[in-house]
Image (cartoon, rainbow, N blue to C red; front, side, top):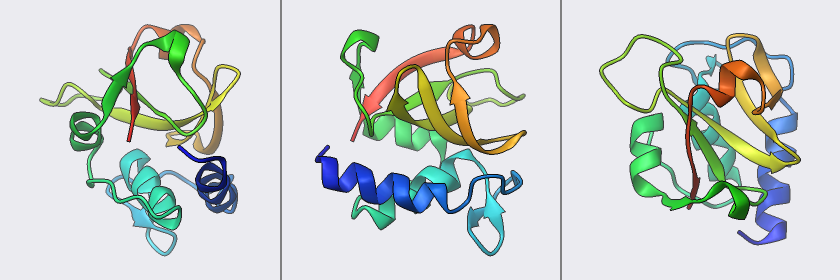
Length: 126
């Protein structure tokens, strides 16, 4: 991903720091869930993503952890009860941090905590 594109995405994302998580939310008027948030912010960077975390995962090229870069997506499983394998997505920003919408609201999250490490699936590049 080009640096300018990443900066557009993160600039858009930062406008919503602290906003509450809303299941099924996909825009600033309704609020965001994780995949609605990534879909919205990537659109502002000129990148089209599918609506769900599972479909976003399927669209991405999988990246090994040591090759993850700013702007890659990071995917998790078992963050809620679901028949889908992928249940959460965030935007990797480097230094073991993702920007995401989760039950604590929108903001930066450390992906190395026990909770997130135990649910990690893969990084993905659009």
